[in-house]
Length: 514
Ligand code: XMP
Image 1 (cartoon, rainbow, N blue to C red):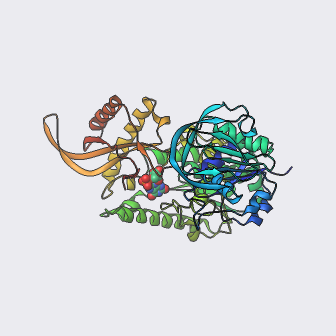
Image 2: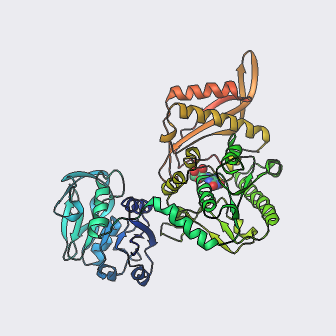
Image 3: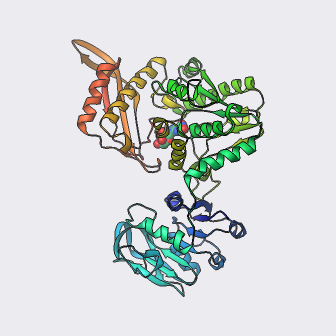
């Protein structure tokens, strides 16, 4: 049976990865391609459906992102969203113009339920709009199937040619029945069977990896983060002791984290693999002594990491395969997939491939989104606390200590952070925050404890909510919880006499402190 594929053509909109995720939620495999992708390549892929995404341009302006009219003549159903909807209308002979009223946010929409896209959608529903242009005149053959107060063509279709245009964003959760609309497109209109399942992923991949690796030797840099952990376990299930995992403990992990990683992957754990933990904290602290500039600290940590890994790899000798925990957003963000290319400025294991002798890279998670990686992790029996670990920067606490990093400061921030995490979990807030941590400011100030004057550090607490980590809002943690955390940190962590809560959003702040 052929594998069903729906492709998302990326015009640079901000929700593009979301579109692909929603399609996968319909049990249909989906990949993202830039709008400049050659039409012949698209034909070769023979997708069951094509979705054109939103984007920042105006389709009638010179140089705007566009597509070939031939895309609409392949007999493959096409769904245009926002910019994609306008572009489809424009390319096929309709008119797109600047709207008098710009629509943004939750908007009431009336839909025509005789359209297959809207079968069983409530006739009057809520959608998410974000546009300044609108379809002023539909292309020949189309009829309007949805409207809002200010937008006569909020959706249009040409059922004969299986072309659909939606001005709003069904992929965004604020479009209350958006998932139904996408489901109708991929399952009813494109006719996808919907047999793509996450649970077959692990099984199929283990088999494929085993075949590929044969008797080869495999090396993996394990950080304890979700991606490298899941990649390592997949490999260990496939090739067992042919896999060696090297875990560089740079002494900048959260409290007890090094031991936790060792407990899971080391000799006492459940996996049959060769696990090597390198305790390199002294080396890292020495290199960081006296360094205060954030980017320099990052660079030192990154380079030292590679050096330590390289030394270990030399002892192991040449290997056949190097495992990397690359996931789909990394692929898209580094410009290999979609159009909305933002090259990641912080990459965890960027230099590894150059320092190890190997034949081929294995990236078993290359096509998965983060939540899918987590599902695979759970299926493989990786402990929940590891699978749902929040993002943690590669340079670790090195970028959560403002100014020079010292062993003493690392201990302070580890202890404060551990209390913070404990109390957030106790208050039942841990699942509702995207990322939260304690950082050590470089500020010392006067306080009084007992009858003594103190001159100690200020710890900063940060908690943010974000969808994509590009922008973020400070979370509103209940005052009582903050007071309790503050009390505990001051009482239990030596050399801290003030605790501050950071309410800066990103922008203008960043999530981390450096
Ligand atoms: P910022 O601080 O840029 O963080 O708002 C956005 C997200 O990226 C993480 N981050 C890093 N991750 N190496 C990493 O692997 C780094 O140097 C680094 N700096 C920030 C941060 O934790 C947040 O999730």
